[in-house]
Length: 429
Image (cartoon, rainbow, N blue to C red):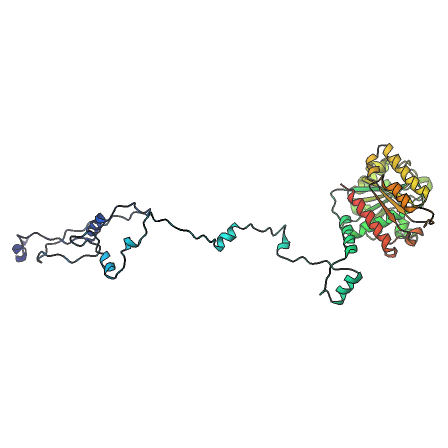
C-alpha cells in the first residue's frame, strides 16, 4: 500500500488553527438560533437535511470567509439573506410579515355572494307569478269585448263585473269532488218546473264539469225526464230502455260500458229513463233505488234524481236516505209557495232536518202569473227556511213542456240554472 506524503502546505500551516467550510444545514441552524422564538406554523415539518461530510484542510490564510447564502455574518446575529434587502432599501421577509398580535379587519360591506346566500330562495312551484306577468282574461261582449276585438287584443281592459261573476259561477260548478254525490229534486205539486229544472241544471253541470253528470228518472207517474232532454221523437227512435230494464240486469253490469247500454245521452248529460207503463212505474221500491244509486256512485261523481210529485211514494225513503242535498221546486202561485213550505216542514219533522235546512228552493215563473201576485212576498216567505232561494224567470223554452236546450233559453234563465248548479256543488262537503 503506497505511503501518503503530507503536502508542504499542510506542514507550513501546522501551527495555525484550521478553518472548516460551513455546510448549508449548519449555517441555517446558526441563523435560526439568532431569531426570536415564536410558535411554529401549523405545517408539516420537512425531513432533516443529510449530514454534511467533513471539510478538507484549507491552505488559505486565516481571514474572514465570504458569506455563504443562508449563513450569519461574523459578529452579527442577522442572517445574511437580509443584507440584499437592506441594500435595496426594502424590508426583510420576516419584518414584512405581520405579527400574530396585529388585529385583522373584514369588509363591512357585504359581497354579492353574501347577499345571495342570505336572501330567501323563491318558490318556483307555488309562486310562478314572481317571474311571469299575470295575463288578463279576455273580455267577452259589451264595450270591453268590442274594444278587444277592434284592437286585435292590444287593448285588454279585462272582463267586466258581470263576466267576472259568470266566471266565478263556472269555477264553483267545476270544483273537483272527492267521491260521489246525489241531489234529489222534488215537490208536492206537479207542473211547477221540477223536471225542467232537473234537465236545465243537468245540462249546465255537463257544460262546466270535467266529469259527466247522471240524471235518474225516479218519477212513479210515468216521468218524462228523457223526453225533455232529448225530445219526444229522438227518444222514441232510440231503444227505450228504462230503469226497470236496468234493475233486471243490474247483477251483470260491471263496467261503464255495460251500464251505457241502459242509458241515454243528451250531450254529456247521461240519463236513466223512468218506466212508462203506469202499472209498473209505481213499483220501484226504496231498496231497488238504493241498488241503482250504489251502481251509479261507482262511475259518476254527481247525480240528479227527479223524484216526481210527493214525498211518500215507495222509493222516496231510499232517495232521501241517499241524498246529499235537495232542490225544492216551487212556483209563484200562492198554492205552490205554500206546498214548498209544507215540504220543508215535513222533512224537518221526519228526521231530515239537515236536508231541509240546506235545501235550495227554486221558484220558476212558469205560468207568468198576474201582477196581483206579490212575488217579493213569496220569496221572503220561503227564503228564511232554506239555505238559498233562486228564481227562474219566465221562459218559453221552459214553459212549453217540450225539449229543454240551453241554446234557446234566455240569458237570465241560463244564469239562474248556473246559480242552482253552483249552489248544488257548494253543498257537497
